[in-house]
Amino acid sequence: MILLGLVTFKLNMVIINSSSSSVNNLINKWLTTLQSNNKASEHDFEILDNSNISLDLERLWQLMDQVWDEMDCDNVNLDLKKISAYYQHPIWLLNGFFVEQHDVSLQHRHGIADWIVQTSLQRILDFGGGFGTLARIICDKVEQASVDIYEPYPSREALFLSQDYPRLRFVSDLDSGYDCLVSTDVLEHVPDPLALFAKMIAAVRRDGYLLIANHFYPSIKCHLPSTFHFRYSFDQFAEAMGLEKIGTCPHATHATIYQKVSEQPLNWRRIRSMEANSQLLFPWREFDSQHLGVWRARFKRLVTDPSGTFRRACLWLER
Figure 1 (tube, rainbow, N blue to C red):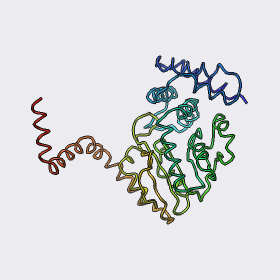
Figure 2 (spheres, rainbow, N blue to C red):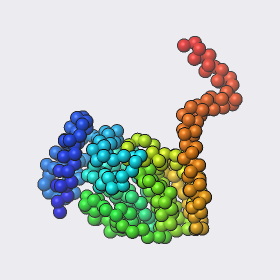
Figure 3 (cartoon, helix red, strand yellow):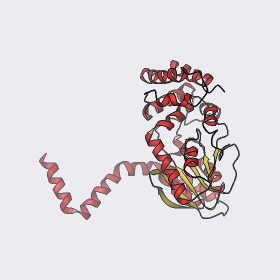
Figure 4 (cartoon, one colour):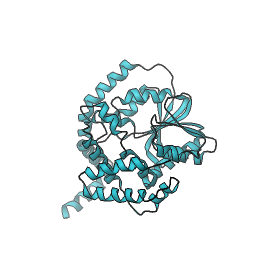
């Protein structure tokens, strides 16, 4: 099994043709180290750990944006064929390797797995699990758990890394009755998050859980601006779609825990009306968050702690 030959060659060609020399040098060095080993074994992955090559999140996002631009993708006027090709690009292999090493990403995934252990959940669906990092961590921590990764086109590398986990499998069709579904950084990439969210909910049993980590922010160009309004309203949609918000996941506070409390048919007319209102209110909520919220906080401090506010004002005037 040749793990990396064609994939790394393609990625190398992309990097050579891109414009950021600092990122090019970093990734080319990484690829050179990776390609220096000719054997297809665990060592293909160990050399990355031992190479002392650092890749930070900002640089990874920069490279992903370069690939997005080179493939002529547009996050406003969507060409789904081009976007589909983008998500099959080898840059996502690099993203998978990055997650395997990035301390914060691993901390978040361990936090999610620990919550699953504490809640005694057995049948797990990792929706859009990609490289399989979270699924492997769950299998390591939960002895009896079975984990499905919904990833219709898993990479050879993901399959290789998961081959020693008999309770883990990649699936291309959604089943139902899962105890828990985990979705991290998925919904901000799709044109209709609510339709996909409904499919996620349908896969979970009554009283089961969904751990959802969204990032409705313009951190990277493949995050679609049409989804950003959900930053302020996603919890309301979850409630309207039969979920109850439990809270944030300990040690992985970017993920919100929901419990499925209803199996009633969804009222799509109401949901789409809520979506239109959320889109309409988004500019005001952005302005309120960035500007008015600061003044509200200051007024609250003035009311609750007038003497402290007065002292801080005096110190500021004395500067």
